[in-house]
Length: 126
Image 1 (spheres, rainbow, N blue to C red):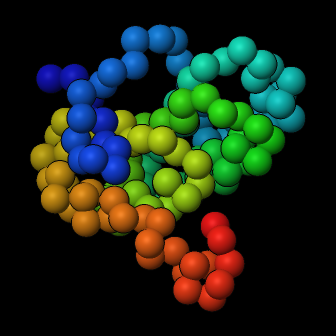
Image 2 (image 1 turned 90 degrees about the horizontal axis):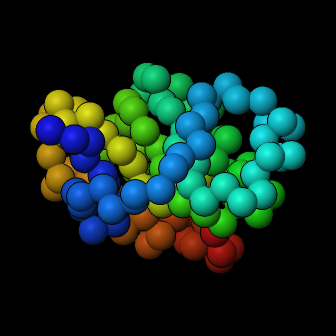
Image 3 (image 1 turned 180 degrees about the vertical axis):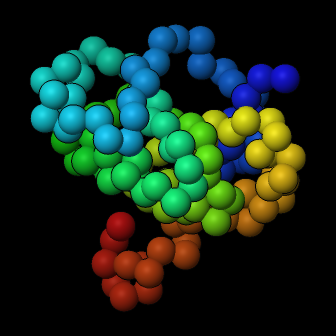
């Protein structure tokens, strides 16, 4: 079975047929800045759920203007979905075994990530 893709709509088939630039969470950011032109999609690995460097890398890529597809891949928990979306990820790629342990309903419970952002409650836009 192929990977499970999580979006705000739940589990979806992988519709991306293009190439990826695969990055480790400790990728050298300055080197990335020079080579992003023309890259349509970046996938950032999460080797363990407790490693949050991928969130930081995604947010930095978005702040510097990367507008392509950004996917988190690996060991993420459904509870981390809102954080992934706020950091700039478009989707999450899970191993099927991990998706079975965290069913679609758990991910959908976090899909309304914009409405529950604390910055909205204090009057600041995300």
